[in-house]
Image 1 (cartoon, one colour):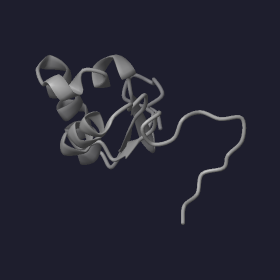
Image 2 (cartoon, helix red, strand yellow):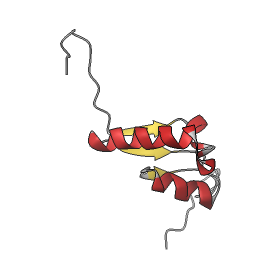
Image 3 (tube, one colour):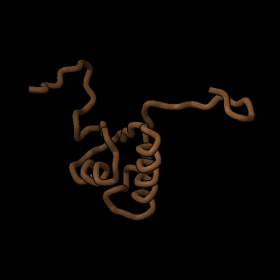
Length: 88
C-alpha cells in the first residue's frame, strides 16, 4: 500500500519485541510498560507479538500477562543442532 506521501506502508503479520525490553520484564517498571504498550497497539492492529530470549517461568508469565502471544528461548527449548522437540 502507498501512503499519502507515496511511502510504502507495511502491515506486518507479527512483531518481534526487542530482547532489551523483555529481559527485565519480571522486575516491572519502564520495560514492562513499554511491552504492554507495544502489545496493546499490535493487538489493536491485528498483529501477533513474539518475545525471544525467555529464560524462566516468571519472565514467560509476565510476558503473557503483558499481552505477548508467543515466546521463544531457553525456557521453552534450548537451541540444538536438530529439531527434536517432543510435542506429545
